[in-house]
Length: 160
Image 1 (cartoon, rainbow, N blue to C red):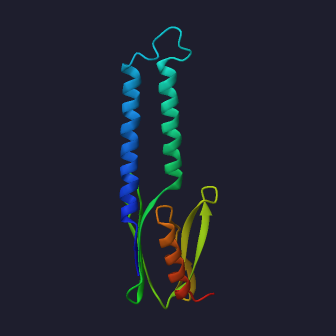
Image 2: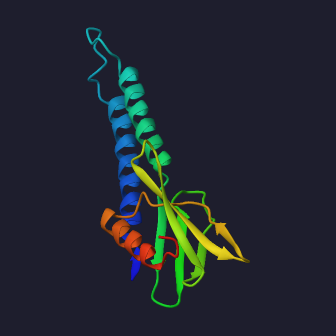
Image 3: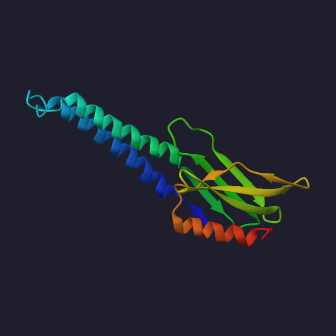
């Protein structure tokens, strides 16, 4: 089985781009339209610009705290392959974990972001000890794919 969330990552990038264009266009529109320039108006155009900027910042912070990852999983051969990297402008660290099925011990799901999002933690037998890998964010993986991933990893787990 192969799980790849490339389409979701494209949607996230497109959503960010469209949101930024709408934000910029709305600021420009408020600046050049004379809707809020009348003296009887209770708010000025600068108040509207500040409100738009606050909404943009809040939505951007929510996206940043979700911290979506590109995620690829493959269990076709005798090795479990996990490829992942954070989706961001300045992230160049791409990671790949390959665990032989015989050495895979278990996995855990950690909740974060108010219990709404999940991280995958992998455990492997390594030199007669159990090694723990750093968590992989699953916020950009579809719920149906998460369910398939959990079922596949449960099947390969040594500790049940």
